[in-house]
Length: 229
Image (cartoon, rainbow, N blue to C red; front, side):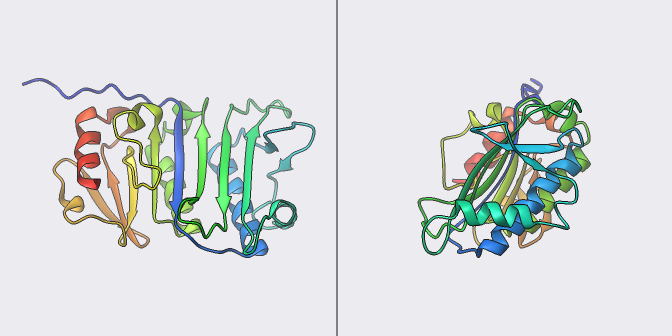
């Protein structure tokens, strides 16, 4: 019997949460931004500052940000567009404080009421994947926290290798090593797929393809992808 392919490695990983049309006040958006940035610092302590992608001349220090979100509320107010207000922001890391901060990026849309412009938070760990995923329990805790913060429709810890195994689906849900799907989007029978561990989380289920991310197999990704279609 041929062993399953263990070809996926914890490199270039993303933590992604996505939800459909939902307005958000400037204050709520700012507090969510602050919470997400603070979450990245808790998960990867070497990240101490986030910068707008178009400049590294100023940025947001993460010290105390979850308790004092005023800088993020101010940024949300400055970036808000339309009525209801939509905030789009891209941030990246830079090792200005010599902490060894890895290359990492955030792509965020909050407050969209357009079904073709989904709200999302995508944290791309372009150099931090191995360290971040060295503790699977810690990585899952980050995903759980993001799910609770955003009340998203679906979320996943994934990678470019996993993404390439499935058809492009910007609306989601798409499969990752760990995938959360809300009850509203949960297809029948997904929680009883062989070899996939399903656990009730928030308003849906968390589906785990393997105990550790590097044990994710092509076969398990294709099994879940087929069930989600």
